[in-house]
Length: 562
Image (cartoon, rainbow, N blue to C red; front, side):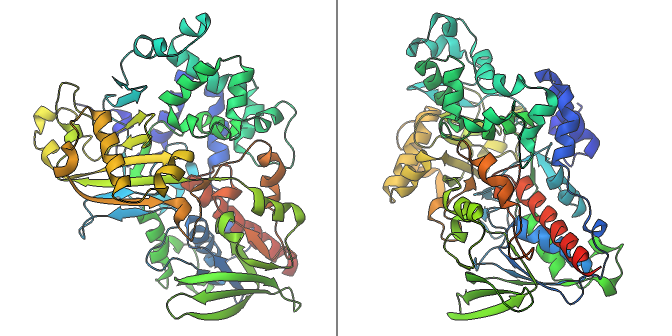
């Protein structure tokens, strides 16, 4: 039996592009393909802006060891710079890429942070291919997940019109419109009414946007629904069925539209063994004198990267001496303060934590305002290690292999592991459900995350377990004997993050995002990260930003000295 294209491991670039093109063809907008691939492709190689060895002796400080900081360091090393990465976390790297292992062998794990890699995210795949990381498809071989809304349990293939429409006071027109058509109209009509060139601005950071595109950034998702003429009950229905929409109703419409535009929720992949292997691959190159990824560069021209964990930056200062930058930081383990002087600095930490750092002199007024105002959303994830995979058992409802179940209960979403997707026909491998597995028992966003994350155990654990039982139609207490371990991350409460990801409110993209890409301190200090990108909350955004920022620094240096 041939494996479907969307189930192939380690897809080639051609395979990924075919998946994207097929998805766009189903949507009737193949004309967007070239724009998406171009705008999400990695920036040019840094050697287009300076030559290997040009930055020999130049000291560069990078604040933050997430993907943006790691990719910037990796690229700048090509030019011979002396790079120091200052990372606040002591026990792990990767920033908001956070794989949690329940066992020392690395077999049972879940993702607290970035979990999916869409086929359209060209920069992510650039580095995955560069480091020869194995990937596995996350697409479920059959759609059989739950939808639990309004105390009603459905499978995603059941008729929403039959079971849920009667529970909402819809207008006659809404009641006679199939849900898929209603949802598609609500989410895509506004951006699809633009020309392909105009809507490509969904993936661009510009000083000014076209008059046709500008309104997409100035309204919230709720305002978009209301201006389309949807009733409040129709909005309630849409947000109950898709809680990711409901959690972001007051965020800018274009934030949700750009994910649909580039098909981010279709044909996703994961890195085999955990997504942490991507930041680890960067880190391993720093420990080698001459990594194979730099085989086309003379070893004498290669710089160095020193990665220092447990270093909490407390101050950034512009020196009066030759445009140097002073970075003050404290070592958590030694409880000591120190300062280093750098020629350039890349600040690759969230604006939420940058807000707590002393900066003298202030950045530009608009950038300072962005650090104060830029919106971040909260995320809470809870992992259950279960001694057997109850969701894969062939019950009256059928088995579930991968995918997501949605609910209007506090847990919001349930994510099933995709490592058993090859057991599409459980009769071929009946032992699959009896193996242990890691379930994302709760994936809540926004206010759901704030409220659920604020609860204390055992109440929080009990609520999540009871919600999970309710969605799956299990007796109360059924999971008590199945759940071996439970682990949770509440990103608002993580001191080095203070939020999960940036997500603009109406007007913030046009007001702040371009300004965030501009350097400070006479071209010597740059911001990087997913918040300074066209893909908020994705590895793609952080990686692209890190690579692009390294290029800007190299270009500035070359213009100054050559």
